[in-house]
Image 1 (cartoon, protein in one colour):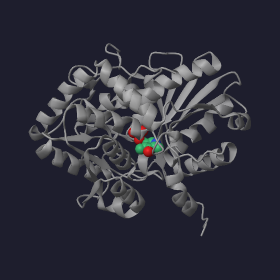
Image 2 (cartoon, helix red, strand yellow):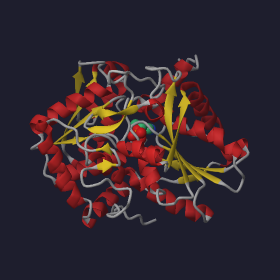
Image 3 (spheres, rainbow, N blue to C red):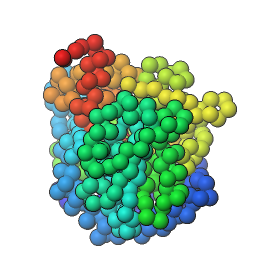
Length: 408
Ligand SMILES: *Cc1c(COP(=O)(O)O)cnc(C)c1O
C-alpha cells in the first residue's frame, strides 16, 4: 500500500493563518517563548509542502515503526454483539506499542532538519516520554524528559525504559507533580534553549503550529484506514470510533474521513468514577472555553478559572484540556463526543482480551466500550472502525489490582 503523507494544503479543516480553528487554538505564550514558536511555525510551513521530507519520514515509518498497521476484521467480537461488522485499526502493533511513535518520529526528524541537537518532552504516564526517547535514539539526538514527581513514583518502569533508551528524566516537584506541571517545566526549559533544542509535544495541543503538526503526523492512521476499509469492504465505514485524551490518535484517524459526510465520527472521553468535578477527564462534555498550555480550548476549570484535577483509570486520558480542533469539531458538529466510565472501560478491556485475543491499552478500552454500546443497535451490513490506539501490556498490573486478582 502506497500512502502519500503530504498534508492537504487547502483543506477547509486547516487552521487559519493565526493557527485558529474557529474560536479555538492560537498562540497564547509568554513573550519569551514567542520567538521559538514563530521559528517553528515558519519552518513547519515550509516542511509541510516539502515532498522529500514526507517521503523520508514515510520510509522510516515503514522500516522502523512497522507501518502500515493492519486493519483487522474482529469477527468474533462482531458476532458476539450481533450488529455491525467491527474492524480494528491495529496501532497497538507499532514499535513501542501505540500511535505516539508516529508523532515523535515526525517531530524528531523535523528537529534534525532544523539542525537542533537536543530534544525535550513532557510525559504523564511515560508513554510519550518513551516514544520520544525512542525516536531521539533512532535519530541520534540528546533527549531530556520532564515528568511529575508523583508520576515518576507511579510509573517507575517507564522511567527505567527512558533511561535505557539514553534519555535523562527530570523530576518536576511543582503543583500536583503530574502531567500539567511537567508541560510547564518543559516550556520553561524551551524558553532558554530553543536555539539548539526542539520541544516535542505529545498530542494535538499547545500553541500553533503544534495541534496542526501533530495531527499531520498522526494522519497516516486515517489515510491508511480509509484505503484499507475500501479494500476490505468496498465502501466507507458507517462509524469511526477513537478515544480522546489530548486527542491525537482520534485526530489522526478522523482526518482520513472529515470530508466524507456520510461517515459518523465518534470521540470517546474518560468519564472516570463519575461526572462530578475532579473525578473524570471528560473535557469536551464538561469543560468551558479557557486558555491552557498556549492554546484556547475547552478546559476543566472551577468558577474562578482554576484548572481542575482530573481522574481516569487510564493515565493517557488524564488531561484537563483537549486539542483545539476537537473543541472546534464539537462546536461545528462534525464529530460526536461521548464519555465512558472506568468500570465500562475495564469490562471492555476484559471482553476484547477474551473475544479476540488482543489486550488493549486502557485508553483504547474506552473506545472499545463505546463500540460494545453501539454495535448491537446497528445492522449487519453496517461497519464500524475502532482505532485500537495501543496495547495493554503496560496496564496488566493495574488491571490485576482493580480486578482483585494476584498473579504472584
Ligand atoms: C497517550 C495515549 C492516548 C491518549 O492520547 P491522544 O493524544 O488522545 O491520542 C490514547 N491511547 C494510548 C494507547 C496512549 O498511549
